[in-house]
Length: 186
Image 1 (tube, rainbow, N blue to C red):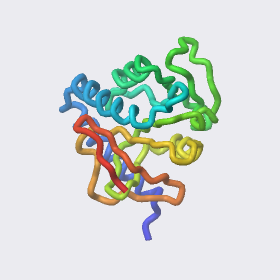
Image 2: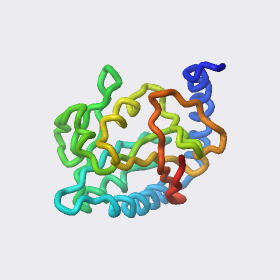
Image 3: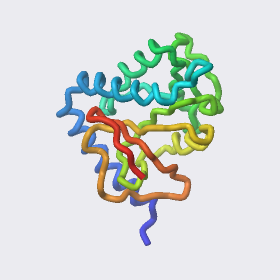
Image 4: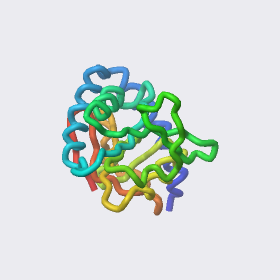
């Protein structure tokens, strides 16, 4: 039986190349606006009634599905949006996007989240997520309160029918969001 870690390393190289090609062919401004609309729809379904909602998000890198419009819209809609600070240990601390000083809130901040937007390189139809390989979100996802919805943001074409290698710690994904809309998996 093939070692899932070795299979993931090899696959990541291929997926990163595909991502560069996909992002170069996309209108990322259009994708940013489209993702914002889809995410705001999801956010409305999970918004807490009696308090301000807390969303985990991230500051997208150039080849990733864009999060700029989404993050701004969530803040404008009254959400507290937390973004990660990568620690030397590859764990994630968090800061409030509204805080210009980026004051760390601690690795336990995900416990406050009502919604989590998670990066990934690919997701398969069974709900297996392929991340960048550092295990950052493998540490974060178990810290979410039970039942907290999370969605993986992908470019169209990164949801694969080919099964991805899964390890015991991998958290199953139920929702993928692309500029084309939401897709339930798993």
